[in-house]
Length: 95
Image (cartoon, rainbow, N blue to C red; front, side, top):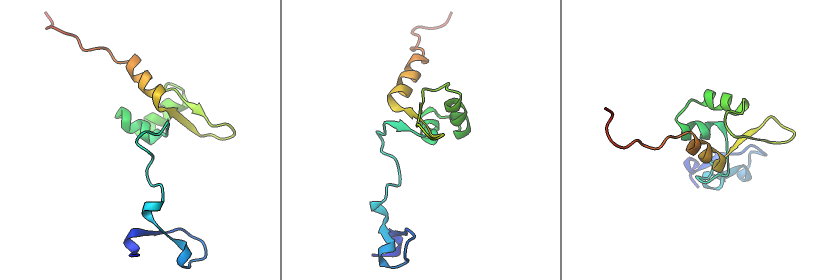
């Protein structure tokens, strides 16, 4: 297998140390249930720093992983949060 299609995974440095990139999970599923801050930022069109700040101050709905500092935002809760804060388009013209 060409090296361009593989990545080094540490270990003993032998042939078993090489694993195809396709076998690794390099990106989260498009339908991940729990989102990390960079994914939240991308969906909302905000900076990663702002996503982290909103998650840590619980402006956004979050799940705290017990025993760690990890925060995740449930996808469904984020979509609901967006819907609650989005006003429907106004019809007609302003006078």
